[in-house]
Length: 164
Image 1 (cartoon, rainbow, N blue to C red):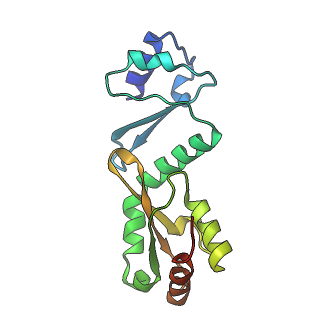
Image 2: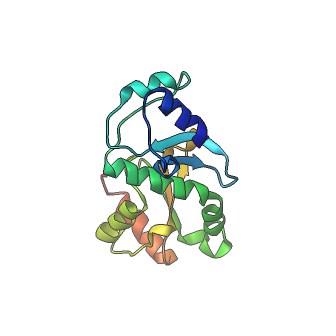
Image 3: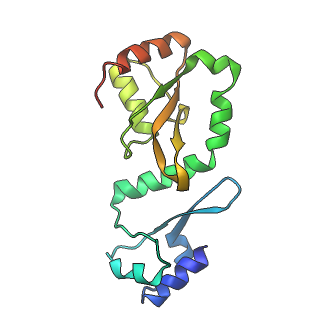
């Protein structure tokens, strides 16, 4: 929980101040249960904090891009069930394509941009749905809802020739 993380940080001598809860983000399921990934926003590199946490906890500094990706993954993870239901609607059957071996640092906007640039098909970022591995880590597979079945067929033909 946020309290547990805050307490471990305090044991390490890290005081996030009065608004400490605004500096913590836990990845949660749509039921509100923490799945074990957290982000602590602070400007300093403090690898010694790992010692105050239970064994098995990993620490890594993150740049702006990493932080944005984590926040996006948290949002996508919460909405994953709804997104998959939307993709599974019968009218979308021939419009969904699967893309595999997507680099782990790619997000929805990156996939939508590549499809627009390489295939000439405009896809809304919300129509790109990534699978997730255990513990909420983004998988290397995503599903894309194309605007039409013909656009989906065109994208498949183009992406088969694309090195990412």
